[in-house]
Every structure is written in structure tokens, then in C-alpha cells.
Image (cartoon, rainbow, N blue to C red; front, side):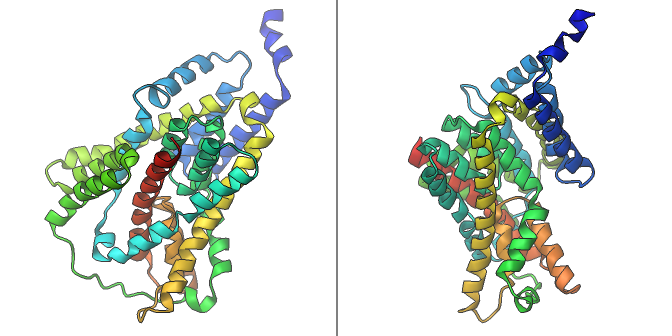
Length: 367
């Protein structure tokens, strides 16, 4: 009987606090339907890893070492990029290439947050890793923070994925604060321009990989896997593989990635003042990314004959496709005939590319 009750004697308050955090993530996944494929395994993993003498600790540690932290690189995030690439349709971006500007603008929060993190006392590599939370791209955040050997990988991963899931809560208030009612009512032309040819769609991922490889060599693995997934989609001869990558592969890796992240959610490592500060800095990065995208659209409206609805600039934060959906929904709430989905998707996929390039630049500067 004493052996059965021994775990109760070793139970710490911090571990119970982590159970509560895990339960909150599970609640958000189930009740609020906020990225359940991510938050549910993360929440359950946080509970598993924080049970006294948990038999799950060893296997989760092994999964982390094999899938994320190993000599060959961050396998699971990179494989997940194949699935994400297979999901992305670059047609809206190829039809209107200037949308790429919004994806670039929405990465400013990464570099501002990096500077802010450095000012509050984090060393350079940790500050760079914290800044990449603003990429709104979980796999990129994991890859960069692992390559830079950050001490705060757990907090960074949780912040990155949690804010991705919380985009529907974080972005709307910021967008409304940055825009007027009149601006939110701007209707954009939804008539599609000249559609890209099949050859263009096939060449696009290849050309982007080559260009990024020349400009930011450290981003080649990230952009290469993303564009390889897109090439599978667009080539037209691997439809079954494309469908598998979009559904089975992406979902399976996401589940395992979510629960594996829990390896860095142990109470003694996670419940620290630095963790709270990192989560706060991550929120700042998301807010500033949203602000920068909206402000660029407002700036372009000063010189453009065809007005742009500034809300679409917010979709440049890369959280694909949640941010695009948020912008589209907000447009319909203002005017039920204002369809912004095509434009916001174009901005969103440009943000996906820009976030990977930003991650590569961070690695080039600080590794």
C-alpha cells in the first residue's frame, strides 16, 4: 500500500499546475475547436510528462530525440512541411504577385521582438529564437530554436503553436484598432486575372527553392521540403501521394509533433519567469506582425488607384490557413457581400514563404 501511495508524496505543486495548463489546452482544442490536432496532443502530453515517476517520460524523450533533436536535423517539422506544401495553392499569389509584399511586411515583428528580447536580458541566440515565434509557423520556430540551441525550446514551441491556434482571438481586435469602418468595407475585385499555366505552377516551387537557396542557404531545408510538397501537388502525376501528404502525413506528424513537444514542458523547466516573459514576447511578435501587414496596405492605398482592404495585410503572418479565414470572416461581418478569401489566401501563402526565408536569415546571422 505504501508503494502505491508513494507517488502522492513526491507530487509537487508545479506538476499540478502543469496538469491545469494541459487541461486548458485540451479545453481550447475541444470546446473552442482551436487547432485541436495541435493543442489536444500538446495538452495531454503536458499531463503525461508531469506525472510523478511517469513511465511516459522515457518514450516521449526518445520521440523528441528521434523526431526533433538529433544529429540529422529536425525530422518531424521538415516532414510536416511536405504536407503543408501539398495543401497550398499558390494560384492567388501567382495571379497577383504584389501580394508577396504583405507576407514580407508581416515578418517585421520577428526582428523587433528579437531586439526587444535582447534588451530585456536574453542572450543573442535565445533572443533570435524567441523572435521567430513571430513567424507564426510552428515548424520554422522549432527548426530555428533547435539549430540555435536555445535554452527555452519548450516555451518557444508552446508559444508558437498556441498563438497559431489563438489567431481567431488575437488578430480581430488588432485589425479593428488599426482600421476604420470605411476601410473594412472596401470591396476588392474578385474577378480572376490571367490564370497561371500548369508549367508556371510546376516551375514556381523549383525556382523559389533555387532563389532562396542562393539568398539564404540555411533556409534550403525548410523551403525545399515545403516546395517539394507543393510540387507533388502541382505535377499532376502524383495525385494519390498529394492526397496522402495533405491528409494522412500532415495529420499523423502533427499529432506526434504535438505530443513530442511535451518533452520540453516539464514543470521545473517550464514554470519559470522567463517562460512567462517569452509567452508575452511571442504575443508582441504576433501583434506587431499583424500591425505591420495592415499598415503596409494602408500605405499602398495612398498611392494606389485600386484600393486594398487593409485587413488582408494581417493574413501575412503565415498561420495558414487560419489567418486568411479570420480576415475573410471579418470582411463578411462588415459586409455580407465582401468576399476577401481569395486575396487573403494569396497574402497568407506569401507569408508562409516569407516566414521560412526569415527563419533562414536568422540562422545565417546568428548560427
